[in-house]
Length: 496
Ligand SMILES: Cc1ncc(COP(=O)(O)O)c(C=O)c1O
Image 1: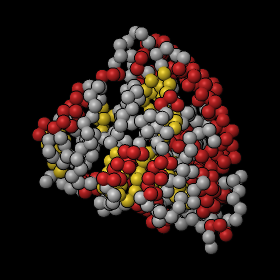
Image 2 (image 1 turned 180 degrees about the vertical axis):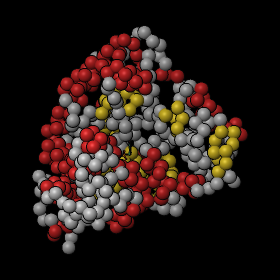
Image 3 (image 1 turned 90 degrees about the vertical axis):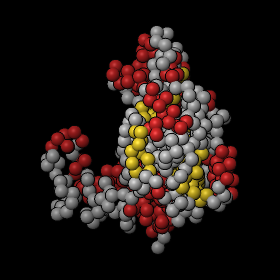
Image 4 (image 1 turned 30 degrees about the horizontal axis):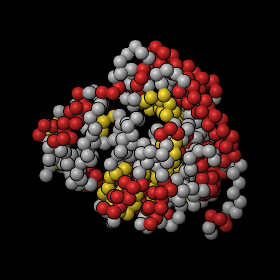
């Protein structure tokens, strides 16, 4: 029986899986199975004092007959995932309990293996790199084109992807990230056309865009633009709990059963209903009230942007960057606040926001502080943020000299790939002095942070130019993440 026959009515006022949790808990089950806490909130009082009793009493699982099982759903989870698919306009949705991280891994493993080529812009989240290792795919990178103001590649240009496709006609899929941390979107419609003209799927990491389907004034979600696989993190921009994400499939280009199998084997066999239950209610809220909640979010974001732009020493980017560098749209709920005219780096500014005002931000790089406004925000919260920004800017503007513009040297071109990430991960490696590493194949990641775009990945040839650049970054006190020796006096290379 198909899902359609089983659940003819799609009733978004329902949260079928969440309701099954509530109903079952009300029956006060006497449990002789895991979890070991047996739903007793007194067993670890410090836990329930902090999280509330529900974190234990509601920590139910499929050993209770009314509770469905994520990895073999037969009832309420089929319905809940189907409602989520319907909410965003996908054919199928999988609830994820390990964030968009596992979504990126599963989608790459589904479409590519053993050296098959996938186009991936270099500015990808580390879960995409993990997906390359797990799948064995060979990445065909799209070199980052740094935006001159924000100093990060804010979008992927369809022409650049097209050029890689022409060079590598045997590519089996394209994976892009849109929107990114900064809220900028690529022309996903053009990328869908490109991929489908080559009869390959387009995979989109839309981790930062779970709210997009729920308001007509927001940029269009990749799902509505025809992408084949789209992963979103409702825990980032909707109300779901941290780690709760979902993966959407549309069309026939990606095999449903393979995807289903991989999603299941990559995740815990004991999926927490805190995550899956939160997805069910987050979907219901987004469908029933998303438009009105996001009306407020958009209004608050606009109000914040206008106020920040009026503060001497600060600027808040938005629509002004759309139309260039491949940027097709901007999500106004992301405030990208340039702070360098205050003489502080983004990181220093963010540190002061925290130490003086206990305000924490989404992200900060050398030049900007990024704040995410969501359906949970209110006018007083926004006012508090704007007041704190103004206070810090006033204190520093015109006093300090510009320190953030210290990294002027552009990174060298992308390194040559000698082994793909999976091959390189499982080869023996040794440690050599960085000054003797030219010509060697790197065995570890070398990622300057910010901006978080890898300079070297396992399997890539280390050039003399790259060594010089890494040393330059370290002199500028830019943090490098990834290598075992964080000072990079030595680097791990493949034993050839
Ligand atoms: C672009 C992007 N993709 C994927 C992820 C992973 O998402 P999650 O935290 O839901 O695993 C992140 C996390 O920050 C991200 O920024």
